Image (tube, rainbow, N blue to C red; front, side, top):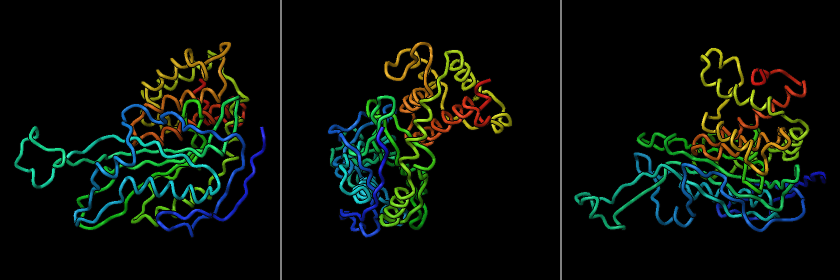
Amino acid sequence: MEALQIMPIMAQNQSRFNLGEYAEEAAIIQDEPTVQPSVNFLEANTDAITMDELTNKCVVPTWANQELTIAHQDFISCVHDAACSFYAGERVNEPDIRVSHIVRGRTPQSLGKKASELLECEKTQFYQRLAFAFTIPTIIETIRGQRLELCIGGVRNYSDLNLYRASKGLEKFSVFVGWRVRICSNQILTGEGVKFNMEVTNISELYRNVLELFHSFNPAKEIHLMQSLTNTSLSETQFAQIVGRMRMFQALSPARQKAIPKLLITDSQINSVCRDYYHNEVFGAKDNAISMFDFHNLLTQANKGSYIDTYLQRAVNATEVSVGINNVLQGLDNKYAWFLG
């Protein structure tokens, strides 16, 4: 594996929001760019949508005083533009967008009509929850034969806001940067690569917050962390012990749970991990054993069935759990020893 080279240069691209003056580039030089974007990063409980549909078919919610909130499409464009500026010279793919929890309405002129009588032009809609992600296929690494691409994205949930307040308030956005396994779109995220609930009042503030996240992110550190997982394997007995304890975790009293590192994966997702242990051709068990890197991928694969509002938290938690168990097996600490019995 070739060493990563981080070379700071000034951003060359001009943002469509004219905010390129804030950007400073940290380009990672790698070979063998890909052409096709990855498969869906979030599958269950969501629908795919395009930027054109968001722009032309969805209304933008307002505060009680009729001031506009930041539109979903502007959030996506802001993060995408920041990435194009910060990683100037790299190829940045178009975003894959997922939405859920549609809110339907009608125009004032159609208030007296039955629902079956409404014309298309009299209907309105927007989506409460949005998630998007895009890769930079010219920034890559390889671990255990699996190609990893740098991936950036964000999550937004209108239910986090009180749109009935009299005046415009702070809006919340979550943004992430990390590595994605190309073959399956499993997302590798740590707490350092995610900024939850950025509170901003306008696009300019959001853009600056996104650039701060890019500046603080250390891609080489994330790769080293994943490489450390490849050096440890779980026997079938150890795997069974871990998933059994994961199932038990939800039944513990609140006091017992507080004494153990948090676990956000659900019972249905644990079932998915068990099935994939035996049937996943890429990350499943081989010779009755599984590497911690593959175990982590089983967790992130299962996380693709999460709702949008819990996706990022569970992705980060999957990494915390995998690294924590790996540290116990390596004798580095005992923080996650409970999961091994």
